[in-house]
Amino acid sequence: MDISIQTPGELFPAEVVHLLGTARRVIDQHVNDHGTCAECSSNWPCQPARLAESALATL
Ligand SMILES: [Zn+2]
Image (cartoon, rainbow, N blue to C red; front, side, top):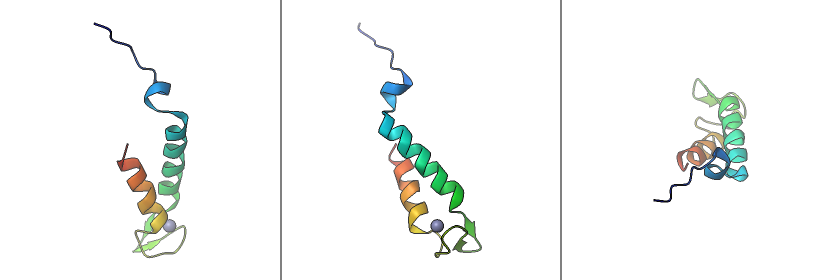
């Protein structure tokens, strides 16, 4: 059998690592503050937070 051990770099290309970092930062900043986003003052959940969550959910 030919089993190759994948390094983290192969499992997660640089673009994905970058996306993860960006999404995590967005989720950290855009938090629910009594139904309003603490960062952008939109109704919760705001679009950036929803985009970041769906980006993480696809991984
Ligand atoms: Zn927000």
